[in-house]
Image (cartoon, rainbow, N blue to C red; front, top):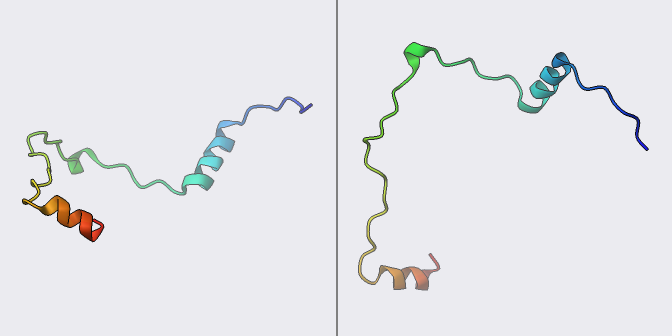
Length: 61
């Protein structure tokens, strides 16, 4: 059976995070943040033109 292991220290976890993800980008300053706008219209695809479905099937699209 395997021996019980000690949990990693905070420094060891920090090192493992650095190895896996690299250096993190600097945090965004509050003055550089943008407000989220939920009023933007959703980006829908336009309705296909008549016969577009059949053309897509024929062309493999």
